[in-house]
Length: 170
Figure 1: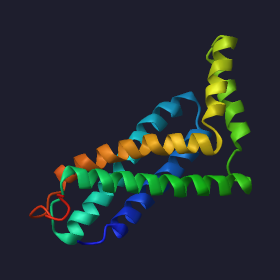
Figure 2: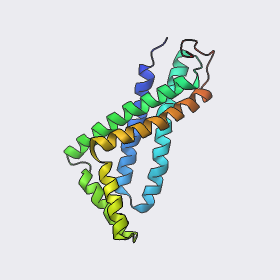
Figure 3: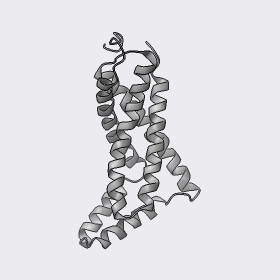
């Protein structure tokens, strides 16, 4: 069975780079930029798995079942998410990226500017704090990996290159 590692690493690189670019867009744009960020996040969560599946099927000249595509997609997004998280923390440490506290304060300011009620703002801030740090990173990683699995399964049906690899079909 051909190695999936290079394909997973390539898909992870695409996802990580896209995630970092989207992060910079998010912190440097106002409310209208947030809509763009939402769309771009979805595209990144599909692009990484699609690249992983495309590379694996193209390099090995085979068609893979949806389950194998889902595994490639989930692995690419999980690895890419870990890399992106690590780079983001490094950029925060050197001051090139706002700290988590600064990001939460920006969120508060946006909610106030939208005219949200103080109680709703506090609830949103508590939710934001819950998704900060390692716990939030793990939750985000699991959600992204699930989306990556869906993207990988879809990509497996798109990038067909030859007979189904019998070992992958098991």
